Image 1 (tube, helix red, strand yellow):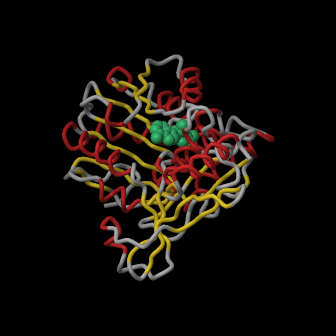
Image 2: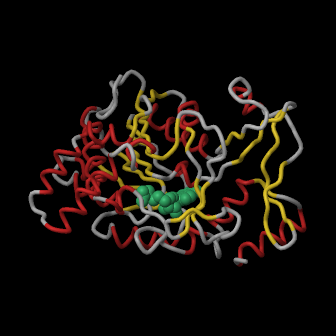
Image 3: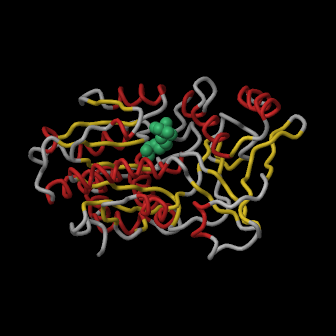
Amino acid sequence: MTPLTDLLMRRIAATGPVTLADYMAECLLHPAHGYYATRDPFGAGGDFTTAPEISQMFGEMLGLFLAQVWMDQGRPAPFTLAEPGPGRGTLMADILRATAKVPGFHDAARVHLIEASATLREAQRDRLAAHAVTWADSIAALPEAPLFLVANEFFDALPIRQFQRDSAGWREVQVAQDGQRLTFALGAPAPLSALDHRLADTRPGDVVELCPAAAPMIGEIARRIARHGGTALIIDYGDWRSLGDTLQALKAHLPVDPLSHSGEADLTAHVDFEALARAATGVAHTNLTPQGVFLERLGITARAQALAGALSGTALENHIAAHRRLTHPQEMGTLFKTIALSPKGSAPPPGFTP
Ligand code: SAH
């Protein structure tokens, strides 16, 4: 039993079952025992690997994307260059390196990172030591200014609630206690207006997920873009409209039971991009586009070939494997999707079709 399981068992014994969102929030961000609060989870020695940790090309493509949309919108200055959930800071470091020669971009950019974990803030501070960076606790704390924002594998880390369709409404999936272990249980059936739009495409027994924290965050992003200009690029795994249980726990790169390693395994759920788009009021959203297609359109293969020229042996093999991993449909290319939010009436940003 992990220290956090022990705490949760006592809490459930005293006050009853908790929602899955409460459970996820404790597992990920409990100040003493939470997964992100206590460790750097990335890379070969950690639990999972993200796109910016696979290759510098990912951040380079996103940097060029940001520079292009910034120029297309008339080079507003100053502007907020923001990233929620920046992990080790690798993506932002690559974005800043790739944009260093874009005239005026660095002078105008105010870099803001939204990070909940003190451990990862330290890693970001080290990684971005050459740049002036401001940390914020929430998207709501970002300045009122043009906002250019990237979020990679951030929304999948936000706690979700799960509901099972019942003929009379929805039963919430809860985390309860069974002897010496945690177990899933179902609450009493109840109607839920937030899921009215899912009554038509689900049947009794189906599970749907809601991410309560996502809509207010997207609302804050969209409001700034509508008022001041800018663009938000969101990349994550998931699809347009969620169906089924997508909660996943990863430990040492392998799936584990989500209730058995509380605070010691990463917990994520697929992102429901339709829900993000619905929350983005006052701005335009692009088509949901597979990551592989998006990166190809931005020119990742030409960049990969240019970098390959200086490589040989194992380094070249690793580089080719990294390109494949980011773009190939059987790797991250199709599972991961991207959507962008921009001011109403503007042309779709690079990498997206009308
Ligand atoms: N974008 C990075 C890291 C993804 S992991 C990459 O691609 O490598 C998720 C990140 O979101 C971590 O940095 C984690 O600490 C942070 N995070 C999770 N929940 C958060 C919250 N509610 N507020 C701010 N940051 C959060």
